[in-house]
Each structure stands twice: as C-alpha cells, then as structure tokens.
Length: 407
Image (cartoon, rainbow, N blue to C red; front, side, top):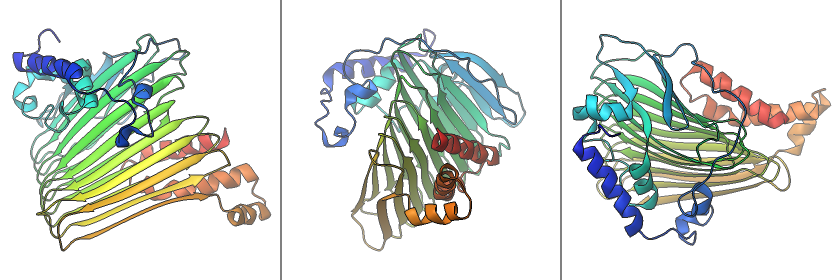
C-alpha cells in the first residue's frame, strides 16, 4: 500500500514496532491453554505454503457485490454502481478514496493492544470495505472470498463494515482453499459498526482444506436500537480459532452471536465468544452449537460481561455439543461477569452423545444408521440455521453438514 495516507502508514509502523515490544505468547497463558499460539502462526516460524489443486469458486448469483482475494491479492470483483450512496470495495483502496469514512474507525475496535491485533495490523494486505449510508437498505448480500492456493504461506486480511442510522445490510466473508500439502496460516480481522436503528448481519464461513490454519478476530459495535447478528460457521481447516465479540453500545440494542461448527478427522476448533454490555436496557443472545466426530477436538469459551452502568440487561448464552463417537472431544466453558444489579442473565453449556434411543427409533422404522445419524445432527443444528437470514445460505450449510456426517 505505497499510496496509503501517512496516518495509515504510521499505524502499520506502530503495530510492527509493538510486535517486538509485546511479550511473546507461550501457550501457558490461560486464554491460550487450549490452542498453542504457534499452531495459528502467532509465534514461531512462518509457514512456507505448499501445493494444492483446484480453482477458486466463481461469483455466486444474487449478490449486490462480490470480491475474490487469492493468496492475499484481489483477483476478481463484481461491483455494480448505484445511486444510493453505498460504497463497496477493497479496503486498501478505501484508505485513499474514502479516507474520511475509514480513518476514525479502522483499528478502533481491534487495535494493537495484544499480539494478534498488532500482527494483523502490521501485516494485512487487503480486505473488504462496506459503507451503507443512513436509511439505505441493501437488498442483496455483499460477499468476499479469501482463497489460498498454497503458494503463499501467510495471509493477512481485514474487513470494515460501517452501517449508518436505519440502514440494512448483510455481509458474507468466506475463507477457503483446496487441500494443501504444506501449511498455510491465515489471520483475519473484522470490524463492524451498526449505527442507531441499523440492521446488520455479518456471516463468516470458514471452510479451508487440510493444511490451513486460521486465527480470526471479529468485533461488532451495536448502537442504540440497532440489531446486529454475527454468524460464524466453522467447517474446514486443521486448526481454527475464532474470537467474536459483540459490544452492546446503545440502549435498546439487540446483539446476537450465533455459531455452528462441525469438526471431524483430527481438526481442532476453538471459539471464544464474548457479549459485552456497555449500555442499559439492551438484549444479547449468544448461541453456538457444534458436532464432533473421529478424533476431532473443539473448545467453546463464552462470556457475558455486564460492567457497572448497564441495568436492564437481558442476556443469554448457550453452547451445546453433539459427540458422534468415542475419541472425539468437546469442551464447553461458559462464564458470566455481572457487575450491576437489575439484570436478567443466564448461561448453559452441554456435551452429549447421540442418543441410542433416537437411533433405535429411526432404524426400527427402516432408516439406515448413517442416514439416521445425519437426521439427528441436522435436527440438532436447526436452531442455529433458523437464525440465518439468507435462505440459500441455510440450504448450503445444511448440505455441508450432511456431507461431513456421511464421510
């Protein structure tokens, strides 16, 4: 980004400097005890890439705009001009072309305070920028695809979404690759601003092939009377750690963090999800469900944080895991941090096996065992799928879950 404004170049230099000043992550820290930082490229030697077969997907139908990034560079795009003032483009270009919209927001939700944030801020190469003016409804979703071929060992990208007062928009970030013979490390950061009375849905679909490892940080700021929904779907990658945070910043806000994951083989997925209430009389719901089979391992850490000054908070947290065989492991760690009175908060976490009685019931009525398991898993996941606003995405995810059950 040689043509980036001075403030943006200075920010990257500050972040680069902090990489040497911040203490190294050892894996002994409480928040890193399940997923070693070296496994997601935050410490240790850089990944050297590898080889993989397969072409990146082409543009899907029914999109307001679509961008494709291959190995850290924009490879293709379909950007339709319109008169409604919506701006969609590559984030590096937006630093120059829309500096007034970017400068005060970039790094304001995910900054340089820790090693992951500093690493991404120093190294990010490209990403998606979306701006929706006050009162504008974007009827079709906006989608960006980050694709790895294996030629590049490390990928760093960012997304910045700014939704004005009373606006409506759905943004999809996809991450994928073929199976790669070597190792590729991906770091992604998403910052979402939902203005007063806005309605914003952000969907992350993480479906890397083998050989890929991914660390993702997402933070959404939800304003007064706004509705924001984060949907994280984790299906592919050797090691994936995702950290979504919903910051409930205005009274009357409705913030929902939804997640669906299915780990098989020897995959390792960790989701650390936080809902932080900074305003009174607001609602949040944190709902994550996962299925685990073979020798896969999943970890869920959830936290509802209500600091002083947020009475009238109405917040819920639920994580449920379905273990399909011996050898698969799931861990759930739900937390509450309540520092104010007059709130209604609850949390629940569960790990269970497929019920033998349910299997027997279906098999006794002529349903083959594999198909019976598929029906049980699909039914288990349906609660999250029902919250996804886009019909075609629900159908796609249902098909992907069915495929993982069968293989």
